[in-house]
Length: 251
Image (cartoon, rainbow, N blue to C red; front, side):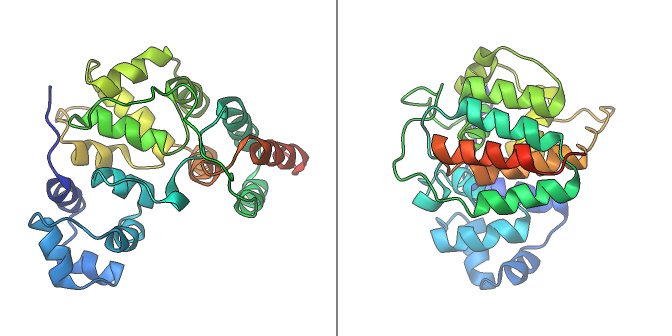
């Protein structure tokens, strides 16, 4: 079982994979170079720095908080509740929309109020296993989209066409299941991240002769980005999002 290193190593792996110098990252994030250098040397990052680094790296801030093993701030935390059916319903409808309607749907979702109360994510154990394996970190990132094991299985099938039992994702979180290149690529699609970036951060070996994972289509990427917007919504707001998706001009 691969042991997961700390945030400094995860960040350094991503920078090395992308060929991005720490000084360049600091400039993109409008952060002080010594602050970024200190984090890469092992200092704990400040939450405000994580929020600046995330867009500079093209990451969802919630993912970077998970890299750092920090609790999610309220504005990045999933709403929880019995949301799986509504989330998958919105994603299914979004995939059938043309680009202009998908953009209108995201704008409409952004205008919906966040859930007033937070609950447990549907289909997720009350206590996740520890976060010392790559698979556990990966599934924590997926959970920030308000997806438990069953929701993950449904969304993966919608976005990639591949069907797996929900228990597979629980076994990934516990470190019992091997993270194959196909699994990493599928979950990277859900997270709207390049699979190669994710494999590099997690320290997963990629065979030299392994074919590169095909890039998801534009509709799939838009639907994955929509998941980031949906996570803060309660069931009632998700139903409003479904209603909006149904009345938007179809492809």
